[in-house]
Length: 121
RNA sequence: AGAGUUGACUGAGCAGCCGCUGUUUUAUCGUUACGGUAAAAUGGAGGAAAGUCCGGGCUCCAUUGGGCAGGGUGCCAGGUAACGCCUGGGAGGCGUGAGCCUACGGAAAGUGCCGCAGAAAAUAUACCGCCCGGCACCAUGGUGUCAGGUAAGGGUGAAAAGGUGCGGUAAGAGCGCACCGCGCAACUGGUAACAGAAGUGGCAUGGUAAACCCCACCCGGAGCAAGAUCAAAUAGAGGGACAGACGCGUGGCCCGCGCGGUUCCUGGGUAGAUUGCUUGAGCUGCAAGGUGACUUGCAGCCUAGAUGAAUGGCUGUUCUCGACAGAACCCGGCUUACAGGUCGACUCUUUCU
Image 1 (cartoon, rainbow, N blue to C red):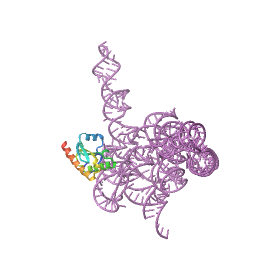
Image 2 (image 1 turned 90 degrees about the horizontal axis):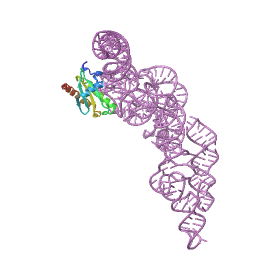
Image 3 (image 1 turned 60 degrees about the horizontal axis):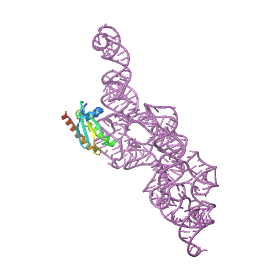
Image 4 (image 1 turned 90 degrees about the vertical axis):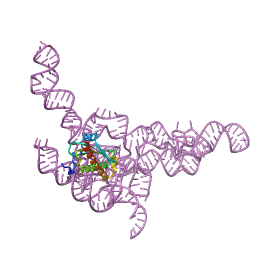
């Protein structure tokens, strides 16, 4: 499939607990006040996204959903990331932040992780 | 018109593009059941989805029946699958009123508790008082003391053992009477809670049961990560078939016997997958019964089903510029949060006709 498709089918997601464990084991990190992103190279020809929005940090279900959607949407539009697995963790400040600044933050993270993973391997 | 009470509804709209997910259809690939991919059509959060406070369905476990313990409920009747819910009624309280609120069973079964004040807080052993009598002294009234009779008056308290008046008395006292209050209550109305009440008692039962307790009724436990199915791996088990060549043990040796081989089946159940998963105490309309909650009949409809977890993003546009908030097995309630808007019924005040 082509990267310019902008679709988000199930195979671009992390599904199993084992896959999450792999990323948490020895990741490349990138973080700011809103998010912490963990990444690792995979053996596939496309990136995969996993979300870990803790109830402890984001109390209301509505806010958790909102953040998940924002991250997914942003990932969907930025799919020329290569073969890495990414897990996004939300931090407490992300609740009150405007969506526009969340997006800007994410776009920086994608670029950072791509270059770091490339140099790491 | 203003102020208010109450019941119900609603919870921004429209268009385009890009996504996610369920279902259906078509095309295509794989040998079929079926699965993958693509396209099209169509469905896709709430009134509270929330808190998890009750009740039930469903599932597994336990279970002859009953009792004890423990927990819950608590005016009466009805509704319901059931309820701590709802409806109607009663009683008490609040409000001018429409209406609203109430853990609203039992204190003469027993036990406990009732601060401060006060003599006394429940067995009245009566503090100051009041009164009769005996004795002593002064002299016909008082003082002291002893033995009694009292609860009218004083003072304390949230509360002091019916209230007021008259009679009565040594002083008093339901001691007697009238009225009021209270207890019991024939009888009457009501399914009942309860209401009314002839009469009667002579006043007896202070409060507290969200203190123990008594009475009546109800309750087995755990929960969809329940449970069911498929099933790599791994440990060990049972059976069959093949080979009957070989090794080890027994034995001096052969036969024999035991262990070891390969493969299949049964069984086992971890990772994982599938299922449970949405047609249901369902919704809408009409009719009938009922004061009502609700029930019955007929007709029509299918209205989220995700599983690292969908219902979103961007752009334009309109308006009154948008609150609380996100399904996770499913229902019935309760409670809590909530910008605004709509409709009905009723009450009070003012004005006009």
